[in-house]
Image (cartoon, rainbow, N blue to C red):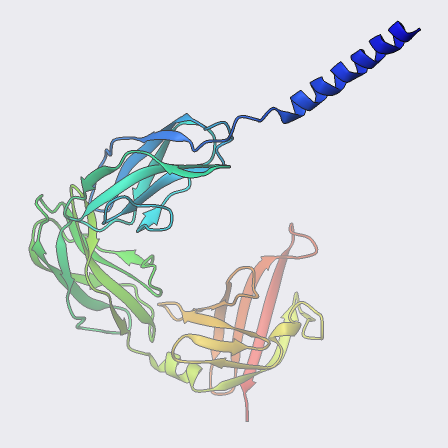
Length: 338
């Protein structure tokens, strides 16, 4: 009996010792990742291509990776001119580094993040190519629908100028128009056409060589206002009739309810349209009024049917909210506020 008890005790003791031994075993510590930086290729005046290769994840998942760069050596995620975020996981990855300054020397390193922290690959140095130097000329010959502008390319950046001209727009996105005024350096002139009367525009000259496109200083100008434009902006218009398919839709909560009230069109292209506030533009032919507001899902294009001292009548058509297969015709009539 004593022998059996002794055996049981020894068995239990062995299990306890094994459990203690297992619990005392230490897990392998997580280490920083090991990685290299890819050589820089496809260098232009403002971008390059690079990347990295995460050889060892350090015993933990890579949660972030990318590139950091600076004009001083050894850039980090906390001391950088810029960085990319290129997913997660080990292995090779590619980055496009953009927004660089032409003719400048940069230092770049790949980085990888795991539970132990952030580590970096070897440092790679590169110099962006030079872009052309271009100056935007002053605007002259401003009319209701056109203006004369241009530029002066004072340096080709080391390669031939293959395209030059002017970009312009009603915002600083310059997405309304672009001229193409040939090749080569020196001064050039552009005529901007099909502009809207009484409208402020932004413009700048551009020059393209084999390394990319550079831009001159930004200028702004306002086209001449027509009599119709001035008449529209000098009057406070109040809603007189708002019809949807010939039915009054101006009541509270109805389709045109938010357009009920006073309408003011300011010369700077802003305005108050009933309960809406936003911007407006008058088409070159002065037949279409475009109203844009944050609270409207899309800009509203309104055909000007009549504009007199006693009446402003507008018309637009769009799919019916109740049945997209049907056309909704909107008539808006306003009169000057006394």
